[in-house]
Image 1: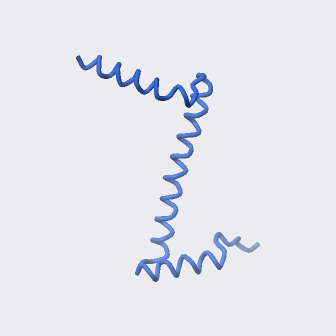
Image 2: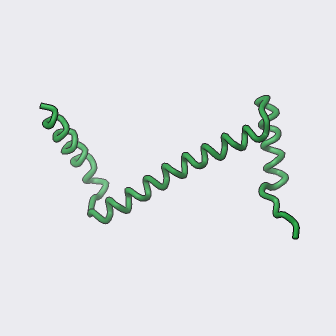
Image 3: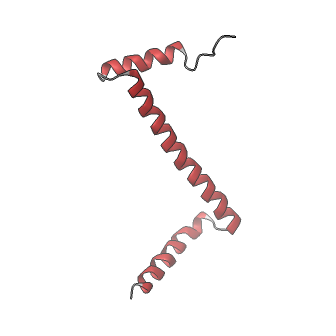
Length: 80
C-alpha cells in the first residue's frame, strides 16, 4: 500500500515559493500556517459554543448591550 499524499503538488509548490520569497524553510511556513489555522479554529469553536449557550439561555443579540451594561454596573458597584 502506498502512503497518501498530504498536500497536492500545487500547494507544495506554493509553500516552497513563499518560503523562498521570505528566505525561510518550507517547514516554517507550514508551521506558521497551521498555528494560525488552529488559533482561528479555537476562536470559531469558542464563538459557536457560546452562541449555543446563549440560545439555550434565551439570550438574543439585542440583549447583549443591556447585559454588558448590567455587568459593568455590577462590577463598578462591587468595587465601592
